[in-house]
Image (cartoon, rainbow, N blue to C red; front, side):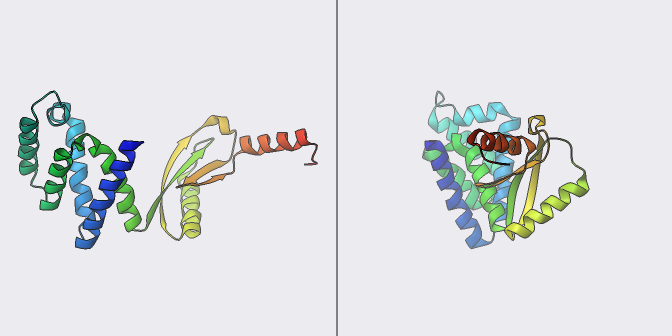
Length: 183
């Protein structure tokens, strides 16, 4: 929980700088580059994040890679700040939060759509359009299947959950019957 709050704080600070300078998307790409490199080269991540290695050596490795990647001055300073504050191992979480904030800045909201069966592209587009109309923002849909829903869909947009699944309807009906209500 604590790392989550810290990561969010760093991401918010960086997005404010990016917004002010009009470079939010540039910074997003540069963060993705460094996080992608850490994923692709676990030895690099170990060399930078493992506290068993000398801090000065780890910082020099980070500095060398940053220089070779030709990142912007702000991102270079940001990465070195994370390192100096002992937060470089939070970089993946910072990147995740930054992506959410950068999407919000562009008016894009992410929605998770869970369905019982595979939906056609046309149906997914209709759902996305309806959600866009409802939220007033562009919606990016992430879909997954869950056969336990029996039918229908469950949509999550931030804290809002729209549950139109048969499973939930059957559970609600069962609860009504238990209470003696007429369905």
